[in-house]
Length: 157
Image (cartoon, rainbow, N blue to C red):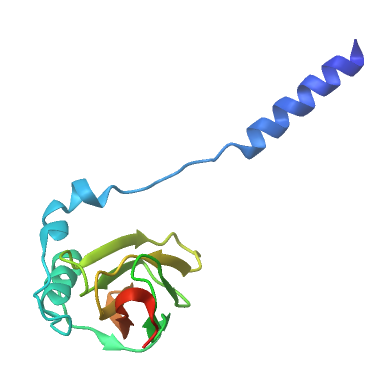
């Protein structure tokens, strides 16, 4: 009987230790519904939609270059899965934008205190465009951008 009790207590403790303490996630589709409606212009080099979305999220579109390391391919053979990664030492909030699709905003992340913002993901791009990451660090905004050429038919040229 002692063995069963020991196993029961051990399994119970293991289950409790694996349960998340608290998960705090904001649903920005509900909190900032108008930001998701901001559209890009037809010209993939026009950052008007991106700048409007930045202002709607952060309250200003005044940004500085630097602090963010953004990696994306120069040429993406398939717009269905364009790898994008970005990293910054510290941030409170990060937002990802692109000019290749009708909607400017791709995603928003709130970074917990002592969190390490180092993300890698794949996004869809309908055509060639500019990928932009904006990070809020202690009230200042930093930006990194890169042009990604999406080839038609995946020919790579």
